[in-house]
Length: 584
Image 1 (cartoon, one colour):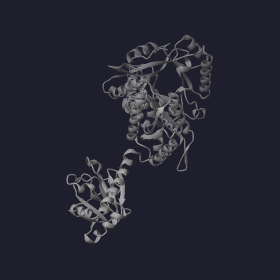
Image 2 (tube, rainbow, N blue to C red; image 1 turned 45 degrees about the horizontal axis):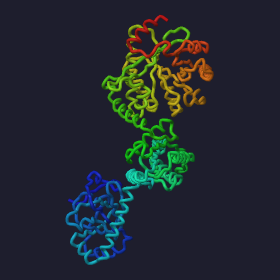
Image 3 (cartoon, helix red, strand yellow; image 1 turned 90 degrees about the horizontal axis):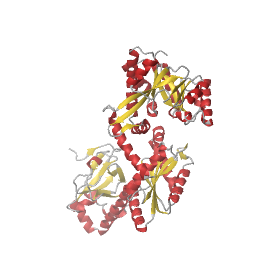
Image 4 (cartoon, rainbow, N blue to C red; image 1 turned 90 degrees about the vertical axis):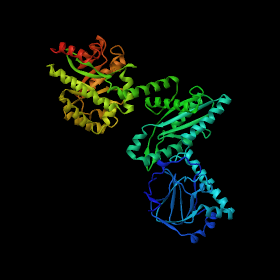
């Protein structure tokens, strides 16, 4: 049986899986190493050659061995794991420096033939004899080893895509800077930069163009940032800047502003102009951390705060932010078990006819009662569920439970009404959303004509063309659509007229000042007028006073909800109210 195994040439084989704690790396002498090539030239005739097929492994990392190989023809590739160090052409030599030491004969790399290759194997005794008789050859092997070690160092401490120092090297630089700052009683600034929505670029343009963009970002950061500061790549879409001897937080803020300004100009990637924004988080030694790990953690927390503010911004870290981050982590872990442990329940808030007071619908509101955290507000846990990628599961649970409850009410003979369920942005991105909703309706036996889905304006505007198609599909199923939180973000009227909608909802932020606040009253009037011109019915939420209700009556708003009529109710409480209101 052949001692060499076959593998794909473009595959790192199984070397990484067999990684061994090695002390001495494999070395090679490529054709440019003239002294080694000349001294070993006579071996070509003195020893028989062995043929290796394309893709076969000559030797593998972790194997025991004590041989040197001279390439007579073809090409070999040296790699450790999936890192390719170099190729070895005819006249070159590859082997382990460990063969010189009796105690360390573990092979430190994997060598693969890139094509049909002939090699001459030189055993340990012959190699030692050659080295003893040729001091120049010994020196050349030492030079090769130094060259390889330098290359290994570069690959260990630098990012292959951008050429910048990597996270490991950045932490070492931080450690040195903090130690000096502690002795000098000076400040160190650490900035973490995240590209906003970089995942979208990767998904739409591909990873090759994504890497090209990252390289361009790295070049611009090097160009725009003071050379006295260190720039590194920390994460897939994250960079770091280390400011040693920062004079003040104002100086650090100036650097953050420079970084934001550097991204105002587009990046040219394969002839395509790409505009990218960033979120920057800032931490300072000593107030935000006493070691590099704490400073990085603080800066990354601040970066998340900048992203939460909409991106294209910078934020400084504070201890309060870290406490929030810890709480968020705990909530995220607890959320994954909330459904299994029956910690979720539904609340139902009535929607009322402005003129008659009759209940026209119920909005479903998710509630989470955790044994340790108590009642967790939806505004707190819904964004965490979206970030954790579990909002799909929660959203489907809400829809299923709401349909089952509504069907149970209708089966008792209650007068039909609408039940409104909120859709998250993540749910709307699903290509199979309509199919999943249809499956839940079929499973629960619930009639789609009684279902209303609430979707925020910002969610629709993520991909308006796709949203139009999806909303039309749901409308064909008989589902009614409500535009939630109108006016809070985009308010793109050009797209608004294209969306197949039934209702427009006025956010409670506008209702709070009505009717006393002139601007709020003017905005609410404008929204109602716009909706009527688009043949949409209007729902006002957050109605708490009789004055607000009178204002809505005067403006011919159709429906409202809020504490003036009722808070969110449990299913049993809602049933009692529905029975009492059934005759209206």
